[in-house]
Length: 168
Image (cartoon, rainbow, N blue to C red; front, side, top):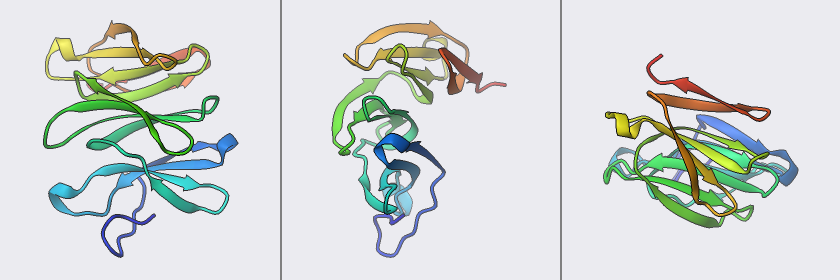
């Protein structure tokens, strides 16, 4: 992958694949050192392995999930200087559909296609910042919160969402 600065080559931290849409999404640095450096999501055409673009985001994307039915990518992260938090969704053409401010740092994300809900784990320094937030991806409205001490990375298996603790 090519970073923003001339000649920078990026090794992604992890990738997610939408095989039906022939897309690979790779999360990694933008190739810029110092305070202008960011963690971004690269959109790659899996057919020719050519980098398409980076997904537009205000800050660092730390977690992404793929919706293969709607051909969307969901991401969450934090702006390192402003200390703001955001959730965003992109379509198959890498256009940002929505950006929602979040009240706490996101530590995990999972998407359940059976319920069309995205689950965002938030872990903070006080009790009010420790919860799993549930968003409906058809309206992008919040449908609920589950209080949970120090939730972290998440995974979906069938209709169940598993949440690892950041304090484990």
